[in-house]
Image (cartoon, rainbow, N blue to C red; front, side, top):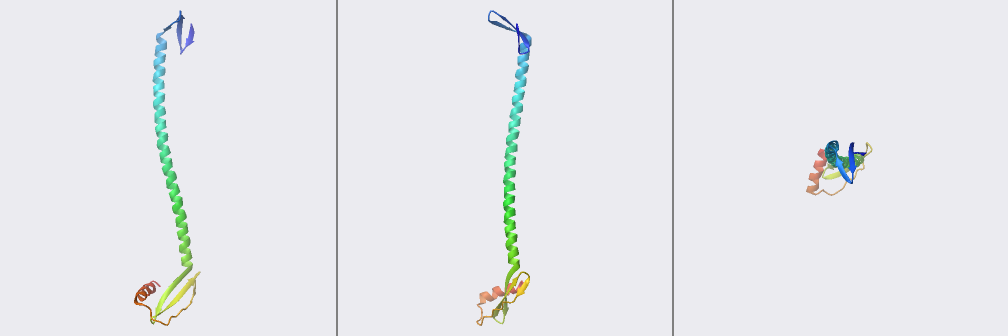
Length: 131
């Protein structure tokens, strides 16, 4: 006789006699194995779900990073525009260009002797309104 699967097995003339204890042990091991596979499947499903969520978070972070870079370039452009502005002001059917650099106003006055077209006068009045 020898020990196998936590039970005694009697070997006689190549016939194996399995005791009741080994059958119960086998059934118990089978139940445990099924339970382990269920837990394994559950863990794999959770890992798959977590992996998808992490991919989504990674994509969102990349989008936020791209948005941040875009926002920084937009702010830089706005700062550059704020440092150098150009206004057109109407004076007696002629216009004057005023440029502003780094907070100081440079009056680069350009007077043109001819009357302006009506469409430009309308735009210039709009510009003057915002000054």
